[in-house]
Amino acid sequence: MNAPDITPQGIGLIAPDITITDVIAHPLTQKLPKSTVTSWGTYEHVSIVLVEIRTDAGISGIGETLARFAPKAYAELINTTLKPRLVGQPAHQISAHWQSMRRALSGRSGGMLFEAIAGVDIALWDILGKAANMPLWKLLGGEGRTSIPVYAASINWVDDAQADAELDAYLEAGFPRIKVKTASPVGESCRRIERLRRRAGDAIELCIDSNWAYELDEAVEVARALEANGYFWFEEPLKPEDEAGYEELRQRCTVPLAAGESNFTVDQARRLVQNRTLSVLQPDIARSGGVTETRRMADFAHACDVGYAPHIGMSGIVCETASIHVASAMPNLRMMECHSDLSPFKTELADLASASMRQKDGQLSVPTGPGLGLEINWDVVERLRTP
Image (cartoon, rainbow, N blue to C red; front, side, top):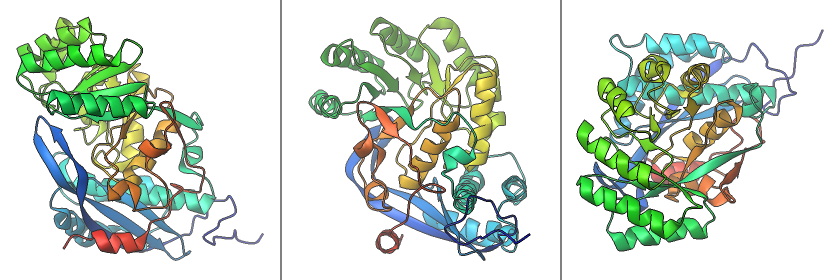
C-alpha cells in the first residue's frame, strides 16, 4: 500500500509522520484605532505573539499567544524553552506536546507559560487540520454548526454621550446582543445599566462586564440593577481568586454569573463550574492552553450543565478564528464575544475579515478552509513586529 500524500493540499488523511522542523515566535504590537476603556484603565497599544510552526511536509501552522504586554518576553520563552521540546517530534501528538510544554516550568499552572503554550497548541491543531484537509471544527468532531451566535463587545466605560453613540453603532450594525463595560462608582454603573436599557429597548439583549471592579456588597447592588433591567449575565464582578465571594454573590442575586477568561486550566474552573455558581464559563483560547485545554474546559462545563461562551478581548484574527472553530464544535455553546476594535490584528493580519465585519444579525459563519482556514499576510507581520 502506498504511503499517503502529505503535500500541503492534503488528501483528507492525517499523515502520522509529519515532523516539526521549526518553531518561530513573532512578537507584534499595534496601536488600537479606538481606545478600549475598562475599569482597569485605557488601552491604546496592545501586543500579541504569533507562533509559526513548520514541518517537513511543507505544512505550516499558525497560533496566537495572549501577550498584551512584553511580547518579546513571551517570544523568548517560546523560542528558548518550548521550541527544543518540539523540533524533531511528530506534529500530530498534540496531547503529548501539551504535557511536555507544561513541564517546562515547575509550580502552579498559569501565567506566561500557559499563554505561550496556547499559541503553540493552536498552531499544532492548524497543522493537523491542513494535513487532513479539513476545517478545525470538523476535525474536532463536535456539533458541526456552520454559524454561531455572537454578541457585540463592548460599550466602553466612557461618558454618556460616547456610550450612547457606541450603542447606536452596534444597533445599526444589526447586533441583537450587546455587552456594556461598567466600573466604580456603583451608583454610576447602576444608572448606566438603566439608561442603556431604556435606549436599547426590551428587544435587545444586554449584559455587563465589570473586569473585577467590585467588592462583594457592591456587586450585589449592581446585580439588583441588572435584575431590574433584564440583563442576561453579570461578567467578572469579582476578582477571579475570590471563589467564596462568587458563591455568596450567587446566593444573593438571580442574574446569571459569567467568568473564566482569567483561568488557565480546567482545574482553575472546576469549583465554580461544578457547583454551578457560574452559569457561563468564558475561557480565552489564547490564554487557556489553546484548543486542547479550552476544549477540556468546555467539555467539563457541559458535563456540569454550564454554558460555554468564548472570550476574545483585544486579540487578533488567529485567536478569534480558533475560538470560532471550537465554539462550532461544543454542545453547550451559548454565544461568542465579537470584539469590534477593527484593529490591524483583526483586519490586516490575514486574508479573513474580522468577525465584527462578517457577522449578520448576530450570526457568524464558520470558516470552511483546512485548519483554521486563514492565511497570514507576512508583510503585515513585518510591519507590526515589536521593535
